[in-house]
Length: 169
Ligand SMILES: [Cu+2]
Image (cartoon, rainbow, N blue to C red; front, top):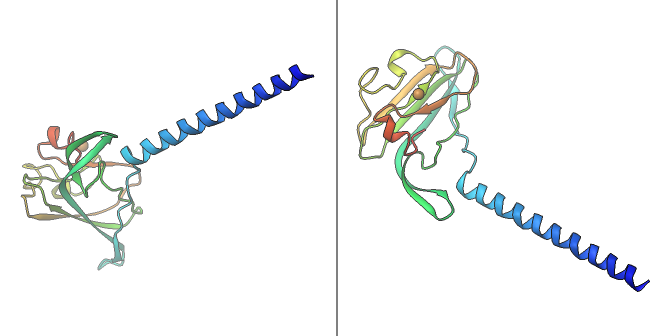
């Protein structure tokens, strides 16, 4: 009788210990995920109608340097769209008229290239080819109709091997 009681108590202690360990690991993982890899924020547009009655969604994206935490304890001097890596998610509906004002608050030129998205040539953001790079303290407004659905990626197309690696995507 006494032996059965001891075994039950041991099983109880073991189960409580396992629950405590699982809870601790879950808290640690979710804490790290929140601080180092937050879900990109959704960009909030100004919504109106264009001259042809289409929904017009106007966004502002500011390119700026930021101190970015790659993982707890590791911070880097990043270049960002709106202070986060990656930048905000732009969500629109097929058929929307989209305007994105890019403001450059960095001390080097920058652009936005809409990787794979069909836009008029002058809106494609390839510095030195489809537009002059946006100089420091200047801005440029990308203007296009969202003709096709899908999920795409935007990034700088000025010195992109460095700027994209540093966070401009
Ligand atoms: Cu690209």
